[in-house]
Image 1 (cartoon, protein in one colour):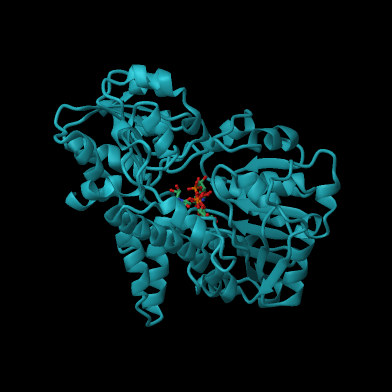
Image 2 (cartoon, rainbow, N blue to C red):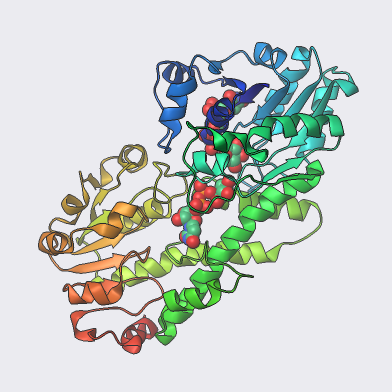
Length: 471
Ligand code: UDX
Ligand code: UDX
């Protein structure tokens, strides 16, 4: 199948590389010439596992890069739109990039085309894309507009794409649905997974994945509703964690108890410093805006967002609790990316916290395995950038863990203890067992669990409660 993907950002680039690996002929179109030059030279603009291998495998063969949208559309049966949909000041999705792509497509229609929304867009967008294409003189039966939302997470984007829980296709005609069915056939018929050179299957993957066909409007809603539900799950557990802190309970035990109910499930129940990233914050605002436009006030989403912001404030209070005054204090910070496994710092709660702590007069030395460079573009020289976790901890009044990178969960605790001026760790991601940290001589604060110090050994459930209530 010949496919064009417009937009070579996180979603477009991963989708393009994966479609090529599934055996399709893909043209990735972007209007950023520098990005295209970099991709053609073999550079990989984002930190994403397996992406370099896939680009090496297919670059210049079944995956080419171009700035010529018209020629690409002419050569393709399906055109996926994966340009950004950033939030406007009012929190709506800015669809002007999507519209500008839709305006160019009609002049290139030389045979039946399926135009597919891959970007996250509000529920009425497929109607608008159709109207714009018709307005620019394309015959009504020469194209269809479909929605094929993407559920990939940064850091595991390639395996999320190739081993999805499900594939959602919103298509209003059988002709259009059959093209998308054919595109995904290597996954749905299992043939991709038989290949020797297939990207390895992650633990949890069920193969082959089901393909769910819906109307385009339902598919558009599925994407927003899915992200909103996941964000709600995180805010819910963060609210429960706050209660645990007040009463001296342990949120980890609570999670085990509720997550093992198969109706709830254990995933996306990790409390922390709140969700961030390029999707959840923007998609929640956009979903609320769409609901309002449809005459429904989705107040639940307001509360999900409020709890999320509050979670950062609570963390800063925890730093105060541990250190009393902040002016002039030196803090080691582990993690700047919005989550582990990525170099993306968009809406990163870690960066937002660093900015707040700088305003409070702290001095910060931070380390992130992949995001130091990107963070430097935002934080400039306001902090020091350490070469590893131990350098960040060196001489610090306390160490803050802000991103759930795997390598932060297996630090050499004796070495860390030696580096710190005071052995205080404030963990916003619950990477360590409080009892272990106390036994190794640390005063250890985490989220929704009692504060652990060597005096609290053996670990008593109520130990942190008084402190939490006082704060
Ligand atoms: C995507 C989706 O588009 C967004 O809706 C979803 O919520 C998250 O994932 P992402 O891939 O992260 O966004 O976007 P970004 O990294 O900004 O990439 C967009 C690409 O489109 C850029 O390379 C940009 O140069 C390109 N672009 C943008 C075009 O080629 N044409 C345009 O008119 C606008
Ligand atoms: C999300 C969706 O998961 C994905 O399906 C969609 O396509 C894009 O948006 P992503 O933003 O890459 O993916 O990251 P995700 O793993 O969902 O994490 C989002 C944020 O929530 C991160 O800041 C993460 O640290 C936080 N999070 C996640 C928690 O705080 N607790 C959890 O249990 C899970």
